Every structure is written in C-alpha cells, then in structure tokens.
Length: 337
Image 1 (cartoon, rainbow, N blue to C red):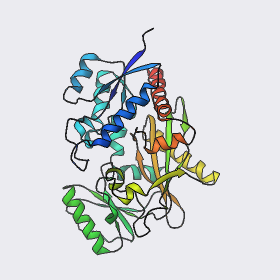
Image 2: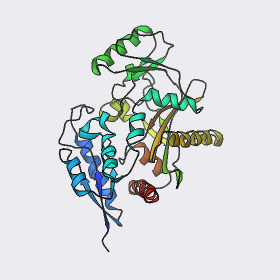
Image 3: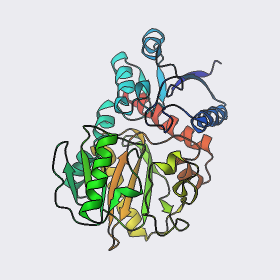
Image 4: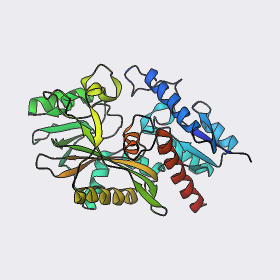
C-alpha cells in the first residue's frame, strides 16, 4: 500500500529574511529544518516532501495540486512575515486542504490591537493600552509601560529598552522603533510585571481540543537589573543573557486559574476562527491578575519552541507533537470535505 506523501511548506533559505539579524537564514534556522525532517521521519506511516523554493512555490501548488499540505511556512511568503496569510490563501483558492489557521485569522492576529479588542469583548482580561500611530505625538502614559510594534512577530523591535519608566525613556523607545520600522503603528501597554505563561491548544471545535500543560517562563536566572521579557535577542543572539538565562518550566497554578486560562483560550480560538493548533501568551500584573498578551495562530513548530516544551511535559517527543498537529488538521479536513 502506498503511503501518503505530504508536502511540507517551509520558509525559503535562499531568499533574504529581514526578521533575522544577518538578513538571511542562519545556521540555527537550517538546523531547525534538519531536526524537523528527522522528527517527521519518525512518523513511519507517512511520507513527506519539503517545498521551500518560493520562486516556484505557487506554480508548483497550482500544477501538482496535492490533496493536503502541512503548512509550516511561518516566515511568510518569500520570507515576509506580513505575507504569512498568502500561502494558506493560495491553497484555499486552489482547493488544497492546508494545516493550520486560514488567511483571515492569520491576518487578524498579526494586528495585536485588534486581538486585544476582541479579547476584551468576550471578557478575557487584557492590559490597558494606547495606540501610537505614525506622526502621533507621544500621549501621556502610565509607567512602567511596554512599547512595541502593533504588527509583527518574532519579537522584532522588542528589547530591554521597550520597558520604559518615564516620558524620556518612552520618547527614546518610540524614536528607535520609528527608525527601525518606518510607518509602523506602535502600542504602549501597561507593563505586566508578574509571571508569564503560555497555553497551547491542538484540535478543533468539531473534533475536540487537547490542552497542553500550561508553561511558565522561568526568569529566575536572569540578571534582576534586566526587565523580564522575551525580547528579540532571546530568539536570535546566543551571546545574550535573554538567550542563555531564560528557561521554561511547568506552571504551578491553582486549578481554578488553570481552568480560566483554558476557557479563555478555547473562546478565543473559536472566536478568531483558528484551526488545528495555536498558542496564547499571558502575563500577570503586579497584583497577580493574569491578562492576555498575544495570540499566535501559527506558533513555532521547532524542536525547542514553546509548544514542544509543553508537549514534553506530557511525555511527547517532537515527533509526537507534530503527529498531533498533523492528525488534528487531517481530521478537520476530512470532516469538511
């Protein structure tokens, strides 16, 4: 019996990627792909092909018309994160079943202020927030504040200087972000100084959800003079204390708080129209009130990402996590066929 051959859509290592420090894929990015291929090879009841050449990706999808693709192209089409929704959109136009969230929720979740507004409308606690549009004067803020781009992913534009304690620091941070990201809308949020949590969901409303164990970001080894946050260097710079000194561990939360987190995440998953898997990031304020930070509809599939850490807490290897995602997507696609 011939095993199913599934194209896995990935970022293109041949093209520039402006979200990377060097402007292109580095050795760690390439190693992530090697590890992905190794983990997928453990799924012996499947065969996989890896499609990463974006110069021919659209033509190949159009000409070969696979019945299903595993979309791990989290870099966006042609490695442009703002075009992340283009790949599933094209698959949708061609009638190709595709894992992960569709183009509408991907585009919506790219706008952090929109997600916050929707979350607030369904009574999910959120931080106070002010939009700073291009050309706007810096509004009066409450401090400490956390200033970051409204659109984007990968923590681009987030540094230790993103946490500001007065108007001078805020003005400097805004000026730096406007230089880095011309024309970008920024958001200033209350800085949530408490513990930080990640919640992972795999599944769909029609088939049931698997709620992965709640993950806590462990800042205990980080220099206390540094603000506690996952900044750009935590994902890109092996010499940074944010890279070396931040770890992850199972959250130790009362049952009622865990139930609240899971209920909020399921509500947001369905309201946003997410599919197959997603990650939700929360953080407590100084009084211990946990509030939503961000929703990631296309979280990292890599072996050392947050989802993989969560899966390891229930004894799942990287390959086991990938199987869960794949089977959730295939179950949904079969039901909708």
